[in-house]
Image 1 (cartoon, helix red, strand yellow):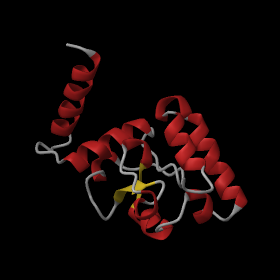
Image 2 (cartoon, helix red, strand yellow; image 1 turned 90 degrees about the horizontal axis):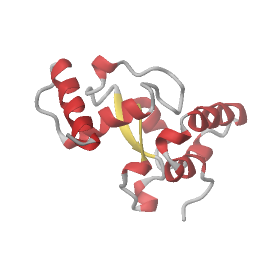
Image 3 (tube, one colour; image 1 turned 45 degrees about the vertical axis):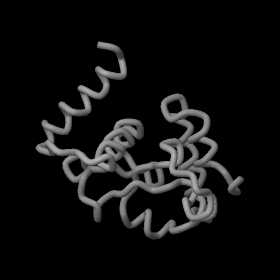
Length: 132
């Protein structure tokens, strides 16, 4: 079994352990983002409760660069955050939404802490001050 197959098997095992035997594509993305982000919302730094991961009104997948402006639906443009954060951010970039400099500085530290895990493209999306 190669690394990718093993990773998929581990995700399936985790879904079953969570009592969630039939996973949608969205559920799989949520779980991958949860693991990639060490179980926190990068926007606030608050922990996301694993047992509530599949509650749509608890946490959601946000397009870092708003899809309405970027047309980018790739994994590198997605993050897991609390539903309230997603609704509040709307179609803004993180840098626009977090107008408070201290809040954005803390956010940037969280992003840079996991930059090797999330990759260059996602880091750029998170820290961008414009689309394009």
